[in-house]
Image 1 (cartoon, one colour):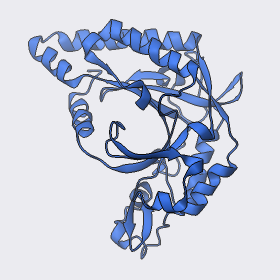
Image 2 (cartoon, rainbow, N blue to C red):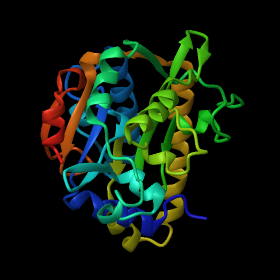
Image 3 (cartoon, rainbow, N blue to C red):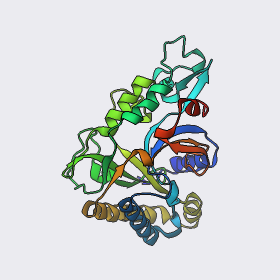
Length: 284
């Protein structure tokens, strides 16, 4: 079975070309990233460049970020309804009020960030192959770095309780708490699910180069998938032995209005603790 799913890879590539506006809360965005995180980004990109060459497209380092929670929404009669909340209830925004769907409480949502326990320490790496994550059955050693079937190159970190205690449920708790304000995290459409991951996209595979190479050789797909497997194994071993710890704080957590999911086009960005309710409402 192919490591890269051609249909999903193409869909993800096309989606990145389309305008898709939304609002999200992200961390670690911009130039002033923690040094340890910069080290990881540079080292991993160098390894992937060595192994995959033109088939790998690293993201602009300034755009690399960790997602806290999407706050995309639609407006009906002056009220904002979170897109994921609408999906959870399987309701169109036009009838959301009549169906009892909770609208977004922007004042309460923004007030949370002024009371949050800043800073929060996260770690990427330091995971061994048989280690377990209490919030998902998916093995964290594999998930801390992966080249996904849709072409995204991803690393994942988790909050720390202490230097020797991974997987503190901080992000999970924050995302569940946001539901009090009418905001549902993308991976919590099913309320039973628990997402405690700090998801970071480092780049993508180059779809044009992949398609071109596939047309030239019938054997390319197997060779390429072998390259991907080797690259993943190398980076995972590196992360396991050289983890990076860094802090997410009020100064590196932002509310962003984007027009492409890659954040290559944004029209508004501000530290979340400096955002007024009026400003946030104006983004919808």
